[in-house]
Image (tube, rainbow over all chains, first blue to last red; front, top):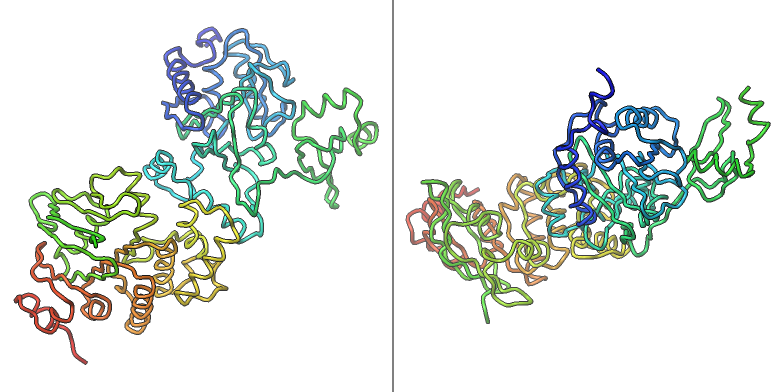
Length: 292
Length: 256
């Protein structure tokens, strides 16, 4: 089959229309999970079928797409989704956050601040924040409808009771615009403060058939206790490549001798800083030699 | 004084079969009402109707709310009814597994109702949880254990603590001592009696165990085949039963 046998961005127009309606409803009710008729996509569940459908519904031929997976542009998931839209939509692609108009992401928010007009699409495995406390979907929907969110704090209570602190480090629950409690997808809680953004943020869960959204400049509050306030935590190191002390870091094991390095999880952010001349502990010639 | 709960002509049918028929009574503040009867007599159906778990086909259940005075809970909006369920009402299930969240610690179980009504201070929630565990005779060092690790009697006491922590005014109990052995039953009854008197609770207790109502209930309602066959003060009904079925019930208790 030739590439032209596909409709623009793979999905047929009726499907994209249905998804756009769900997106519009989601934007109108920030944090509310809108059901949609998720399609079978040419990739397995868990690889971003929800995000891909939302991206497909948002793309226009003039868009520039960036895809990241855990902050990186060059991992399997990111590369394959980027190629998918290059083939089916012939859109321009980029690795630079500032140049992209649509960014599909898995588990991270880019370090560079997003601007008005950009769309950030999240891949969501489990959209229901109350799922592991209350398995009945009928009941959780009712709890959302009636704003009964005491149960969410039971989880945080358990964290403190067993670990002495709120140990939830990713998918940290937030309250959107003072109304809906939302799972921000498994982003590290370091990223939670940046959910209040100038960009439109759309969340797609393919297997669970839900779409939800945070419109620009919407208030997003991370849940916490008065005596155990929310804390956006990260590894207490600077990046070993670009020397940045404020970005979110991945830990990389470099040998079987306890050696490790910390690098920015956002590859574009790190590369940009290195191009500007910033150097970390293991950057430059040392690293080039080590790798050779 | 207005009654805390007025029940008027509550009827629930399961198709052609009668669950409970035309039940009416008033429950006054601080009063404990026992409902006894054999299995299938409609006592649990009645309790579920009163507590809002089942919608009766006919009748009214009027509760004297704190804010707005007497209200029919059956026509009340669902959010308001669920709010009642977390604040002024408590429901103690026969099987503690139905009333507890088995996956979280005892402290979180007790704290859940506090957090549901807006408590957001970890230290205070925990303090209250530990305090309530003490009041139901669970050692404070078990506060972080899950209910799975508790014995049946402890689970039931934990369920009671979890329900009473928000200071409810009306407690529904469905066979609170069912499934416990006799000595544990006796301790639980002792504890319940203390808490009911101390907190001035009103309660409706459904049971088939006459000893339970003898100890706890001020008034007694005897049900058979979905109908109330006899009502009166507990001692009066048990010592001088008038209806044939009540006589049979009282005489069938084993004496040791």
